[in-house]
Amino acid sequence: MSPRTKAQNEEIRQQTRQQILDAAFELFANVGYSKTSISAVAKKAGVSKGLIYHYFDSKEAILEGIFDQLVQIGEEILNFPEGFTPTDKIRQILEQTFGFIENQTGLGKLMIGLALQTDTMKTLQPKLDEVNKSQMQLYIHLLEELHYEKPEIEAYKLGAMMDGILLGYASMGDEYPLQEMKTKIMEEYVPS
Image (cartoon, rainbow, N blue to C red; front, side):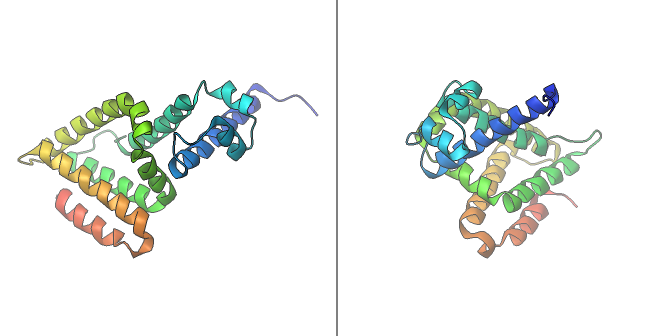
């Protein structure tokens, strides 16, 4: 058996890191951030406690790693091709957000669980504030381009509706009228 290449070692490293993040995310959301120990994360991930510290300095660093992954998903939604019009952009944001809600129900539930824990929010607040500010500026600018009279208020309204839809679908599953809500939101925000 030949030794592993650098690429193989890096792939194993990334897989192990992701395994730790996935286990921690599930435990933080379901058991609670403050009630979850590094030992519990190690057990859930199927790795040693010492190996976790090879990847993360602390439980807070794991939480920040989870948050960074969620931010990356958000950034993918806001990655617009060259030449997209404001209408194209709002359509992409809504289509991909509804796709996330429908296809990542477990992740949505876990996000809601984490968001309701004050100890996790305290740890993430500086990063969260930065992301929220950046996203709100983008949405406000986009809604200005779409000629909304009060784009800032409209951005908050749209955000609140999408949060509510995520919560509704996460709690009700297939009983929630997701497609009807998508049609309603698209009719309201995507000019014909």
